[in-house]
Each structure stands twice: as structure tokens, then as C-alpha cells.
Length: 380
Ligand SMILES: [Zn+2]
Image (cartoon, rainbow, N blue to C red):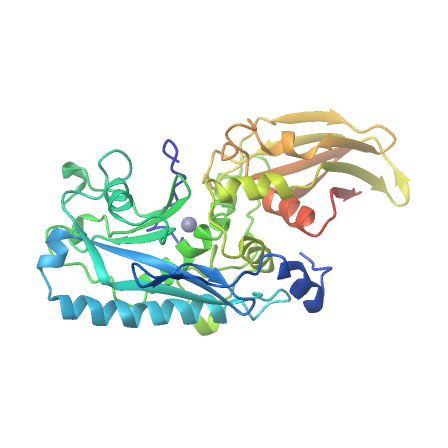
């Protein structure tokens, strides 16, 4: 996370539905509008016609990379790659209980590729700033910036991932590793189109679920590991299409987003749709018990451990306690990215300890299911 841009690592591995399919169709009817031709430029603006969602993609390439191959080469490869991306994005959204409500068409603009000079990084005078400045923001809400020629961290090149530039999605494709320096890097291999599809998940409002993977070796409380729900945003970032899917959780967010693009979607959506109340309760058999609860936080954003000092500690009363769910996870409503992604919840009663995992996406998912009270039950 850097300044206004919410970043995710490009190079890293990156519920239960109560809504029937018919309900889904009804739910999104209100968002449907007909496409309008942008006569002057010959572009069709992004649209949702009830069946397809069409999103223009501005392509940008670093000048050193551009000069290393022919224009025909890039156009041919990009056309092929975006067909792969569209296939993956759509097919992975039809495999769970929740289905993508639309067919997505991400349309790369191959007729007007932006070639930018200088190093690729985020922020002032970075690749994202240059490209956003050069593109028509009335047409394009998304740019995918390819750096085919990595010049080294010492020259200011770094990054990769998906940013949010005042509501414009900025995906930077770069292999910032020493072995990739000062030569043409192939971003048309079998992995990069998968990575870009993952980044499009961010563009549609989904968090990095892999950021909440806990490695038991770094769990200072009880040594248990935790793996979030399987998803293109988690363990399936790089797996073949046939073995991959969007999680039900991700599909709900993507369906909510539709064709919209507004600033801060990832964190604002989560905050808006979060459960309102977190109810922690404990029982021994049928009897409510006043267990002592300790909530141990993740070892920082993207940290794969659990800290030994609890962030919250309280004793249940009549076997229960109700908390403001947002204030448990979000540290500051003005900076919604600043939150604890996952807690290990410990309940102690009569000298016996029980543990449960509690994540931000569980409460977000509950809220999206219109279950605004999320109950964490601990049984002794
Ligand atoms: Zn990511």
C-alpha cells in the first residue's frame, strides 16, 4: 500500500448463498443501460447490456520493450493473450454455487498503444501517472501497462500489481527480478495471462485472499495454519484454467461491481457491505458459558503469522458479547485499507482453550448475504 494507490504484489502467488439465479438476474437489472457510440473516436464506451459487460483496456508498453520487437509481434501476441484472459475470467466464474451474472469482454485497444519512456514504478512521474495522463479517461477506466524490459531496482523500477489512480484501474505487468534485467522479458507465457486475470479481480473489487494465508510456523499462539477459500485471488492465481475458479465470495463482489469503476472500490465495497455486528458466543453442551476471549491479530497486512499479543480481550456475559464488527477489523474508517485481515480467536473456560479463525472476508460475505449479524460460536 503506497499513498493513494492500493497495491498488491504482482509477483506473489499471488459462504453460502441465499440468492437464487433468478434473484441475481433481478438484482442487476437496475444497472443495465444501453451502449452509446463515441462517434468521434470510434470507440464503444464501457457497457453492461444485461448479457455482456464490455470494458475497454488501454494498453501501454515501455519504450525499450517496444523497440525490441515489431509492432506486428505485439499486436498479435496481445490479441491472443486477451482472448486467454477473457476465457479464464469467464470460465472461472461458472464453477461455484455463485455464477458470474455477465459475460465479460475486456477489449484491448490494439490500434492506439501508448509507448512510454522512462522507468516503471508507481506514483509521481511513474508509469501509471504517465499513461493515465495520456489516455482518454472518458473511454478508458482501465489500463494495463507492460514493461517488457526491466532496468533494475537501482534505476527505480519496481512494482507490479493493480493500482487505483483516482478511480482508474492501473495494472502494471513487470518481472522485477534480477535475472530479468536488461533483456526482453516474455509476458506472453502461460503464467502472465493468469496473473493479469488475478489483477482484473482487483479491478472488479476483490481483495488478495492469499494475504490471509497463515503459516503455522509463524503462528505464535497455537501453531495452526490457515488457508482462505480457494480462488483466483488465492491459491489458484497461477493454476491452469481447468483447475481454477473464482470463489463464491469473489463472484458476489464482481457481480456487484458490474461495469462500475469508482475510486477505492476494493475497500469501500468491503466496508459498505460488512456485517454490522459480530456476536461472539460460547457454550458447553447447551449451556452458555462466560469464556474469556482473546483475539490475536495477523502479523501485519500480508503477514503470514499470528502475533502473541491479543488486540482485544474480554469476558462473555451470559455466554455472549456483541461487538461493532467494523471497529474490530477496520482501524480507521478514513483509511479502509488499514485493517486486520484475520484473527485467531481464543476462548478459555475452566482451563480449556478453544480456537476459531475469523477473517474480514467472512464478515464481508455475511453482509453481502444480508446477514448483518455474524455469529462466531465456540463450543466446549
Ligand atoms: Zn493481488
